Image (cartoon, rainbow, N blue to C red; front, side, top):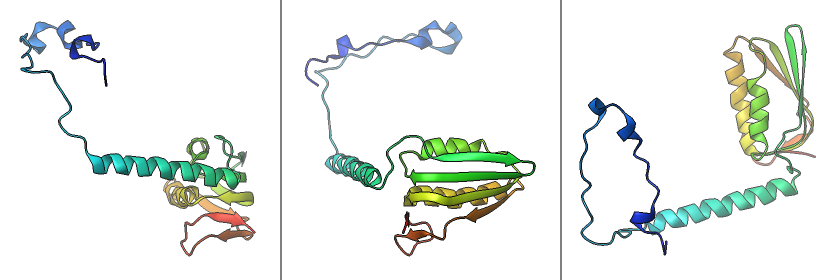
Length: 166
């Protein structure tokens, strides 16, 4: 952090703009010496580096398996008391935020069918989130039916492992 000095840091004392009943003015206590970093946690730095490497590997793995967009492939069709969520393409943690946005917009209390027949790949993160979503949706008074998972093969023995179309 060469070149940065305490005197050059931008500081806005927004509390000083409050009525005087909310604060008391005190002179700052000066440092007795130049401030410096007391301790750097090597284990925390290594953990952070491992997380960054893991994230990069996950991004590459998802890209190789077809997750190349931040927008998840899905369409919603609503008819009366039924709603169909048709998934298509590859789904990974990279595009799950857009999928979660679509899930949150589904009308509550309907007969929901989630169609996986056009899914090529779904990573374990998204599969687990769908597993949890099914339970959440039933709490709204609705029901969830899944179709089209027949051709998807689990990559491990877990109920929420990644799924790949065979």
